[in-house]
Image (cartoon, rainbow, N blue to C red):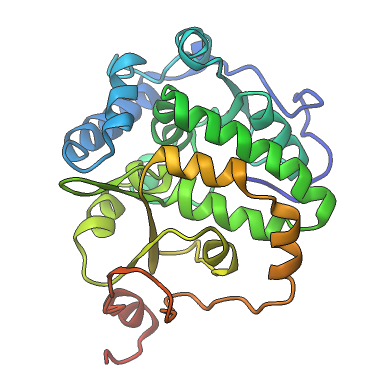
Length: 290
């Protein structure tokens, strides 16, 4: 999402944007997109939130090859006023929040190699565009993303970006939503990952906990493996309402007096939808299962 670098790399504008360079993609790079798209589009039927699947359809992302950001932005602007701009990689916090606050979503313009098929550390065009952009076609989620960007601008002035980043992580990147017939995926880090699309809904390892804004902003997370906690919202409307109706200043002040919640901890007040075994994390660490 963001980097600690303070100056844009060579060739980037002051806001860190660059030309996408669509004409420079090779047949192999387009083929990689098509391979990833076909695999995820098939897997996510019945797993992803309906709003995400509708976004794939209305944005015509099933067309072969890496999407042209200009064409994609033209369709998106007509729906929700958002556009997609290319960046060379991670961007500074203030730049990131400014783009979101003005309905601009920044996406990496490079795509992973075959050796990185199932994991890469820095988000590529597949993660950013396939994972994030379909929900920007949904008016409610589009409003949430703008509200998050505006909140990030305030958090920077209050020294609370670390707290707010947890909200992004556990919603935009790794969120689940409750539906009448079960849980569904909407976080970009899940929908763009074949393995985590299965793990997040089916595996007995992770905790699945009802969403609580303050709880989420106290909770640590991991970036190097599957999540040990997934937080479950009731709806995008409720997520937007809580974001707009919360005065974050007093919340940050309160959280500054409280300790962080360790990953995988269950609190007495949690709405526990699934109490995970944490078997995956224990196996990865070499610790014996309980």
